[in-house]
Length: 280
Image (cartoon, rainbow, N blue to C red; front, side, top):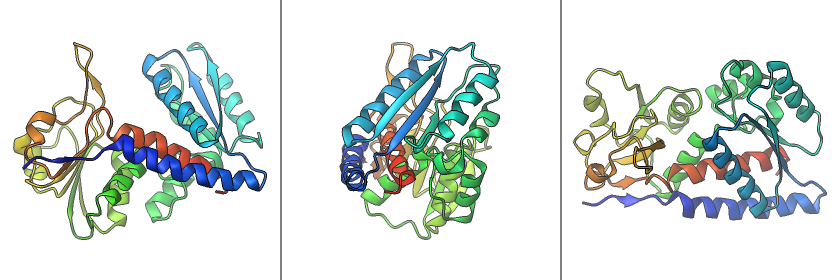
């Protein structure tokens, strides 16, 4: 057995094509969706992510702008920018690029983004809606993974799903979205005792810890769907995931590559949420 790769780039292109049609429909009604990204500091990875987001917006007719602030920006200065964007009628979605520099209160800044423009799905109201099962803005990475699962047309009802990682941005919301599809969900962490005992049960395995090679082939159920969220750079400059691709590929049924897997879908779902915020 060799796992089928779930091509995140190809699926993202399909999603963005759908976005183009929705953005064009909004334009005929006089609305051009707008996304603002607040970038604080000069983190190279953050800059790369922002470039990808701006490029995706431009490809589908969504207006985007990047507001850059130095790493020395104060809490008050960042909050002032967010509050200005909250009342800007040309901006429908606001994204504060994470991580923020040390010294800034990240939760407090994210809480300043009004819920109706919170296309990252981080506002407490949107998280509460996610918990209740009908959020308007699901966090982009979990939403992208759900689209990936839909693309291979594998029913989730009654399946065993294991999520490794408990972050507010990926692990927890992914568990909730899987529960919403009637999967049986277990949430683990990198510190879970006998992690392999859990992962070997999983029909769907989501790995989002940030530890390269955490999951190896002997930890995967034959035929399982494995979604790798990890993005780690090795000493020789290569990008690798949290899954040891070489040993897992012969075991899994479906597997996402790194790069080219979950990452492009995260960007695509940000555009989806921005268009939804604009009424599309």
